[in-house]
Length: 94
Image (cartoon, rainbow, N blue to C red; front, side, top):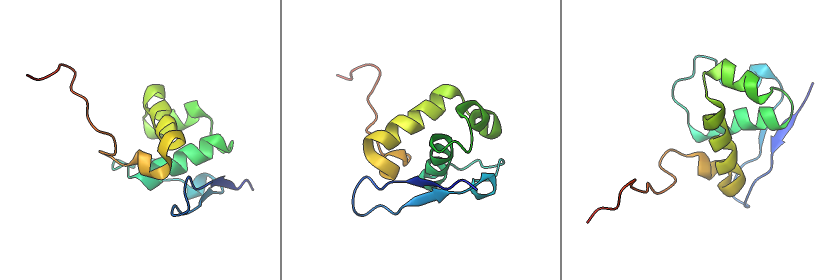
């Protein structure tokens, strides 16, 4: 059995482990909270799933998954929260 752990980015984040596919969010997940996203990234990083398997399993585009991975690498689980990043307008407002 594989054990996948997410190392905390700072001293306040909990350690997240994914041991197998049964420990992942359900395939019917529609509401993606930060901890569920982190579990999927942990499973891919630990070899429980490939990126393409995760994308197929959860209906994600490879770009969407890559964004989750980038945000986790930059800010930890906190970076995976919806609205955690400031929204930059496409066109500057006057």
